[in-house]
Every structure is written in C-alpha cells, then in structure tokens.
Image (cartoon, rainbow, N blue to C red; front, side, top):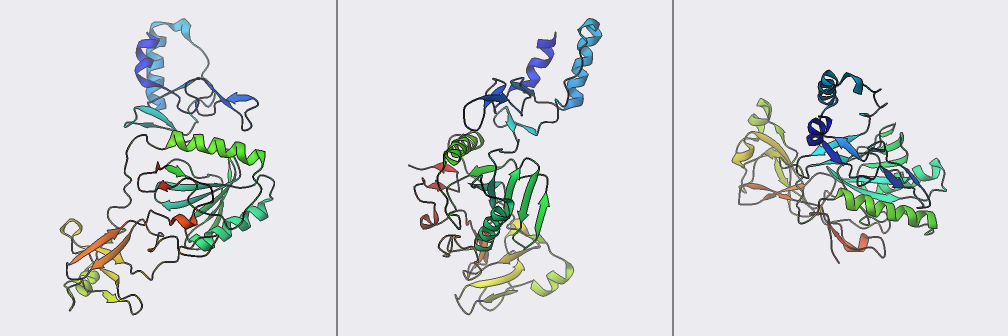
Length: 329
C-alpha cells in the first residue's frame, strides 16, 4: 500500500543521482546528501499532502507507525514540471565565491581563493561590482553572504543566492590568483553543478518581456501621449553624443498599451570589464534588456544585452552563449 501511494509522488534526487551520498570537495571521502538527507529521493508534493498519505497507511496498518524523520521537509527543493523531477535548490557549497546577476534568473559564478580573509574577499567583490555595475553577492558560507547591489546598497544576509541558471567563465576578475589544488577541485565541482543546473538540449532564455515597464498614471498620459516631430513617442530626446533617442515614453506597441517604458541610448552604459576596464558590451547590461527607439517606425525595440565580448573572458575558458547557456566548442 505504501508503494502504491508514495510511488507516484516520489522522484529520484538529482543532487546525488539517487545514491543518498555525495563526494566531498577533494574527492577523498563522502558525505550524506543534504538535498535528500540520504534517502536518494524526495517527495514532489507538499508536506501536508504527504502526511495525509501517511495517515491513510496508518489507518490500515496501525503497527507501521514510526517516528518522523527530523527536518525531512527542510531542504530547499522545487519540483520541475518540465523535467518531471525534483530540482535541488541547495546553496552551492564550494565557498568562497562570487555570484553576479547578469540578468534575472541567470547568475555568473566566480570561485575565489579559500585562504583569503573576509576583508580581502569583500575588496574583490566590491571592485568587481564597481567595474561591472551588476548586482554581486560574496558567498562566504551557507548562512553568510554580502550583497553589493547595482544601486550602491551593501547588505550582510544569511540567505545566499540559489536557483536560476548558473554560468561561469564569462567575467574576468579584477585580480588573478594561483591555481591551487583546492581551487582546481572546486572548479570541477562547479562544472558539475552547472552541468546539473542548465537545461539540456537547445533552449532559449527570456528576460522581462515587458521591458521593465509600469502602468501609466493620468499625469503620464497627459504628458506623454502622442508623437514628436520625428515620429517617436513624446518624452524621448536625441542624445547629443551618440544621436540615439533616450528618455521615458508611452510604449506605442498595442501589446503594452498605456505602459511607461524607459528607453536607453548607446551612451547609457556603465558595465565595464573588471580586468581591462573596457565595456562588456556595446549596450548596457544593467537592465534585463536595453530598450531603444526606432525612429520613423513608431516602435520601442528591445536589444538583449546577454552577450559579453570575448576579450573579457577569463583566459583559457570556452565561450558560452548567454542567450541559450549552451557551451560552444
């Protein structure tokens, strides 16, 4: 009866491949899988639903009573309907490392030397943030992380980033360090972590399809309704430096009726490489996408800024297309 009830709501743990055990960082020993607590599988339903199934079994077989497993539902897990499998959202534990938010749900991971103190690690993180101008998190432990946001707010928090699409080898660091045995072992773990987290096969990633828009107020409509002399929406002005339009306007697309959108010109780009200081991409990567006006067409077009110039990749790394997160040889 237990197999009949629990079988359909149970999936093999993806973190340990159903073994219940995982290798340690240096590969010299093993440890109980933190995602499934060593069971090799996890439930795909809420805790109260599983408890209801347990009561059904006990109603028929009272002698089958056993003490609950402590903290069995405490793991950070999610069930992916697309994969039909449990997804491990546990924190990547090869500390310390940086997590840079490239776009929503896509995060760049950079391993840092394990022999540096917190002050030195924070200095690297802050330098990376100053150059890239992207949200950065310095993860020091499972419950210790420093956030450096794009708006300049620093915060110490106990919940490091987890989930999303992790990538690596796309952003150079502001300094270099010896390629130690420990760092090599953690690099291998990171490669396995990314391999298990990135969707298999061809895939595309969509950012904010609304282009960061908001509902227009009555005042917005009064100020921005209509088009200017060049056929572009009111609220946009031509940049004296690059000649492109920028500003805020009502999106002329019928799909986004009465929505205010921010339009950026080529000059509005402060995302630089932490190593060489040059721009990461010809347009800003700070927003989910860069929206620009197309003169004469009456449209506000989105230009995804997901690709980072090859000259800013760490030496010796393979190129990764950020639009699909698929490795290229």
